[in-house]
Amino acid sequence: MWSSAIALCAVVLGASLAESISVPSHQLANGNEARNGPFGFTSDRFPVIRNGNPTDVARNARLAQLDASIESYQRNVHDESRKRSFSQVLEAAARLEKKGAGVQKRQTSSLPVNGVSMININYTGFDAQYLAPLTIGTPPQPFNLVPDTGSSDLWVTYAGLNDPGHNLFNPNTSSTFQQTGGSFNDSYGKGDAVGVIVEDTVTFANFTIANKPFGMATVLDQEFLSKPQDGIIGMANSILSDMDVYTFFEILVLAEILPDPSFSVYLSRSRDYMFNTSLQGSSNMCLGCMATAYNQQTVGGIVWTPVTTFAFWQVNLTGIALNGQIISGTSTPAIIDTGTSDLVLPPTVAAAMMASINAQLQSDGSSSVSVASLTSYPNFSLVFGGQAFTINPLDLVAGYTDDTRQNFSLTVQSVNAKGANGEAIAIVGDVFLKNVLTVYSYSYNGAPAVGFQQLESSLNVASEASALVSQATTASLPGAPTGTLATTQSASLRQGGTIVGAAAHSSGAAASPSSSKKSAAFRTASLGWAGCCGVVLAWTLAAAF
Image (tube, rainbow, N blue to C red):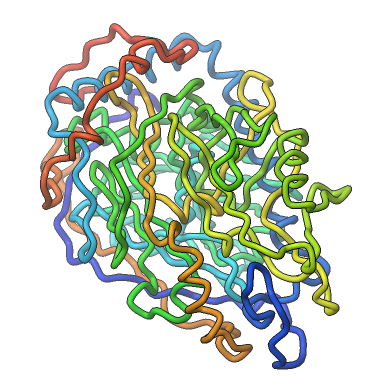
């Protein structure tokens, strides 16, 4: 499969914003009285989280999936062919960085050509998932997938499954479908996503790849069947792949048709756009360019931190700060993961963070805090690359633990998760990522890195809270789906292993000095076996995947 030919085509399509979808998973407590809520919000601002909290279920499923990815890593990292193949990706990324203008400045009102809108899936205001549209086949069949920086494989659900609630792939209606004879088994918690590896034309973010291998899931556990996603598109390093194939993004890097060897993500907050329709459905991802922060201002430039082990997007979390002071014992390696909703911390780190506000860790790893104990704003921030990035308190509260509304269920989880090399790690999910623009780069000063840029809205939490309190009512909490799932269009392409189009650069000025200045620390970043590769690729891609 590593020798299969590919054909790529960048297509310039009109991009329309997808709207948010609210999934009514929890029943709200009765009553409209304005009890005191977290950090001064009225109680009706937050739902009651009943038994079967979806954040706990999702956490357990996510940890099982990460364990499966680590198993793939430990197998693949000893495969010399796999190591050489991924070294080619890093070498191509370094060349792209040298000849490119760097990641573009963010935009505030329009989606770049290489961008893709994402759909917020929220449960009574709590952001549970973000989905992006993708098409497969000829003619194209639409799907809505989780762009996941914590895994590497691409898979969708097979039409043979009895699953009327999802978009299903029908190979019989695609003229470009091919079988490979391979199979995959990705673990995600209570069960697996099991199926066969096939090939077809795939279009994502206005790029089209012919003969792209992906998984066609013929067996799915109930956890997946109950969610709105049609599958996953992995955005992590392919060394984690159970299918032994390059990721969609890595193929674009190898072809060297991107403006920059990075992709970026902007995740909007459902609780913001309940009262600000201009922000609705504004989450997006951009390949080779900066995501668009709609009607949002950013503070400062991009702050970069080197990837320490390039399996997941793993970096060093310097610490967690409360009111500007780093809490002792909160430094830890961390995975920056769009596929995780919560902030998942090693037990000692979670205990230190929760103790700072007199919160409690439960035996199942969840956390809660008494309503009465929160008399002022706890201003938490995560510190990366010497810079503290503030977390909006809205993102730290999932809801009330029960109908008494005496305690809040928090989005901080205590879990003994392990990294690719067995080290204790944190998993930094959407709780944090909604507060920053995030850039995932395969080559920043010649090495993989993650960049963050603070969103100003997260710094103005006090004034924002005051405005939201006056508007919060039970009726304003979403209780039914609103909006529709958007799908990308497709374009015809020539097959045969040649590049037939080049990606258009997104509009906008070059990166600011603060985001383009290189740090010497990146020259010595440890990347395990990857290191500094010496493989040279030709300008045309003869054998990619």
